[in-house]
Image (tube, rainbow, N blue to C red; front, side):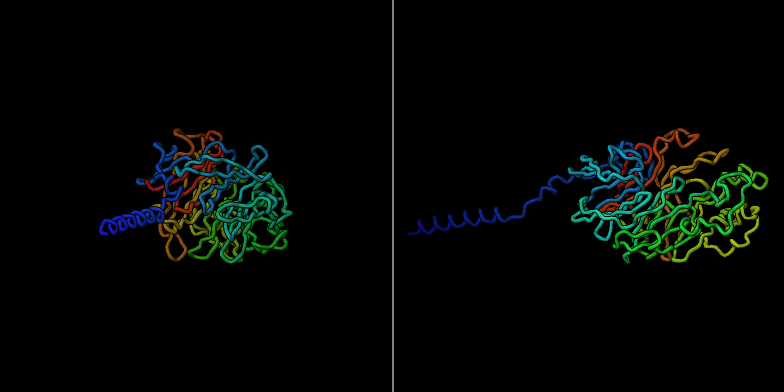
Length: 432
């Protein structure tokens, strides 16, 4: 009898143990594949602050422009030249080492802008904005729809950067197909048109309904004007405001050699970091910003001589001014926690690099960081965050640069992604 009781008890114990083994939580395949990210030994050729590293996600993608990262970590890169007939590259990292091991592409249109939000992936060409529904980080190309269409195509400053706010609006940049709205563009002695007719449809930022199909430019609202060319654009979620980087005008000396010398031509005007509000007017083409005088000055095409302001005195000022011709092509307010706390809510800026700073040295070709205060303004001077893109030796012109920083994006884990426009390299910046 006792033997029977003991055997029964042992059998019950074995059954319960088996049940526990079957119901115990198992590691997911994703968790099993998880690999701690490691920076490349040389940080992918970049020089970064201590404690921060970088790895190359992909290379040789083509003429890369802006990029965006989906909630599942997939990276979407826009191209300025079609590769195999496609204009957007999708990079997937299936083993978790931070490097793309799958590379696909879609869309037969080239362009610059790309942003993920509102449950959609939005992408722009120079003449339209389309969007694709996204679910679990994946997009549905077949369900793509046109949001903005029929935009004028022009080669000078024709790229359309885009951004979303948290109120259902889409913002699109319309660069001016002109240097200074002269009667004859970039012709010495040609006067500026007054009033400038270009401002009616260009030289500003337009606001559209992010959910309405087939809008024309006339259906949008001119949100801000007096902006010659904006490529870097971002919505600051902490402030609930739009910010932009303006490319300043060119050729002060070559057009007006009696008023400006070659050194002034290299240093003026400022590249402007702008807080953009509805109705903002930053003064182009009548005005340019002089960072040495910290003023908006009257342009020479409109009677200026580098000393007078006149109608420019009341124009909107930048919140920070940078040296001329650095070409700020991307702006990102960092909200992640992966990088050190000092970067939280501050701004990263890609400076694509200069073409007309002679006789001075070339400038730009780096990513800057600007700390921000709670008032929505910079709380300190900018610092160089990432450099080394162009290569080790001093370059004489942009064609010598091995890489030029172009786009910025933040990953779901707080990684910072940077794209290059020369050959199409993508870096992922992480904490070392």
